[in-house]
Length: 226
Image (cartoon, rainbow, N blue to C red; front, side, top):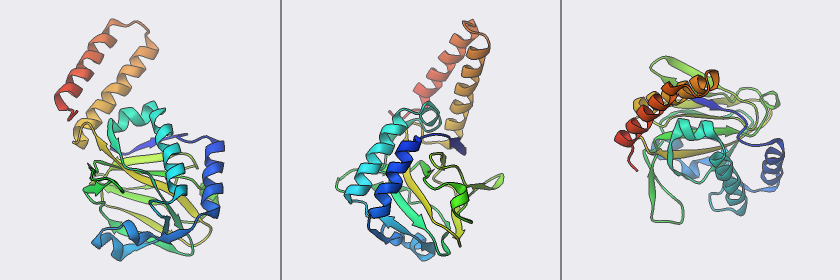
């Protein structure tokens, strides 16, 4: 399931991200890549432990908690501290699969990466190329979203970032361990939750909403890890 989540950050928050990233130091993006990913990864990123990454990461995590669409799509149990990358001058990231388990920096804890997320911080007109291309059973899906919008998709998906020959593409990326690890089950719960919302809006106080909501929570209770 691929879901676009609009307006994660406000215009003021995007400006703050850009300001902080403008004065930050950038390192080789292969610092956080697995063995196979490092072969095809050409970009730069903020150091995981830098004050800039921590400040902006805290901002993004707080914003995620205020997004009902993100919550219902991801059903998050744990969120990996957001990372930040930069593409320019033809940089790209070839086809790869994200690591299934990642250790949270500075802790003994790991998360299972059920969902990958990319939050765009540059406006589409600021750069050429740079599409995030996600492959699934229905083909390839390209995402190049407005600044502040995010795309979430199964971390089991093969994906790549097209070259950026003009301008600068700034983004945040991170992973989510979901309460429901199976993407097919998450998709069913997401569709059911969206349908409940539509029925509730169209016919307020419809008794069917209570029955549908009961089905949703009983399925979540059956399938959730937590």
